[in-house]
Image (cartoon, rainbow over all chains, first blue to last red; front, side, top):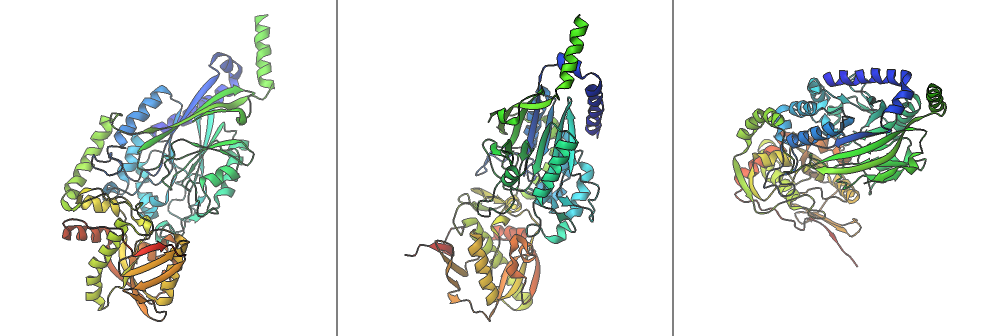
Length: 304
Length: 252
């Protein structure tokens, strides 16, 4: 809660800055600012590191280690956002025994800023998710799940704008189609809306109306469906929409060694990233923003 | 004079629609491993939760002579075969006792295998990792014609959905069915078969819609995870193998 207040306060002060002291601000502050986006996905209740005898991921992962790493990065750059692309729940007995309480409490201690909702976050039913919300001191974002006729109505926002040192970062969430994937008795009256249409609405709002400097899509759609090319994936969203800078994905447990660089519908660059699953990796994307009449994103240097 | 220049610069700044633009992006992933020191506050917070769970889960039940993964195998995997055969072996006595009928075969879903079984000791925790969900066994009565729909589904899915050893499915290289037999006999359209699966799939999970037109459903109230725990308790050393039950065969 304290953190949210802090962000709101930043919004207020930065508005003043941009109205009153803009010219001076530009002249006195360094011209390049760095925004760091940290991200996880499909952690699936993997709170402890894998044991030394695990056949695939021995001694990797663990929330306590992730906490140290995140704290060090935040210390280096306070302009950091920490995001999760869903499927927080289900995968270890921590979830079976405590229903997600510990996952949310730890994410709050790590100061996550926002998460989107994965299909497994409905595993104890929509009531099971609702029941754990008081333990989460971060936002849940989903633009294409309509929760109007459910218990989650009013508890999930389509997007949120974070203001970091005067820079506006718009983050919106996307979820996967639930029919055929999650038991209807679990997701109840949640309505899935077309992610491409919703993304077009979101980017129009965040770019044109809200004047965001960066737009991030937090997605649980899945990276790519090679056998089912019509199924909407992160790569589909990247190619068929515009104005997104970064898509942070999940669901397919895709271990990308580095972010994928795609061209959007306007032939501009968009990054797509996903860090597999189980908290084995932390994704880190640094955006260097300059204030000025600058070039288009086509001339942006990308080091991956 | 200086003041004049300052104002001029300010004007110039406002007049040309300035905004933040991205000049550089750097992206990498950071591995979380032993080189990162754990945060002691977080560890202390987790400890009481961990102790409670460990006390309940770490009794050794069985032994795995090798690591089994659902990624090892084309249309059947050692771990999938183990699960499907365990569901048959553990559920049929219950089904038979309650309804005086027998399960014909088991169908589960590849996505429902949530973890590998690592080589070494097998505990209750292993069962939680492989089957963290609360899904339970149901037996669905299906006409042979629906079994053929199931085969069509598997032909499109092209995945190693686990089946128990009573069923034998052979596809050609492009996943078209060559033969389907149950205990060596062809599937008859009119006959009713008893297929054990889990309630997730019965309710349309993974789009297994062939379960919808059924002749009845029997709810055993027996969790898949409990099936695994019971199976592990009875098995000193796991004997999971990739075999010939569901294969692709090259035809010339």
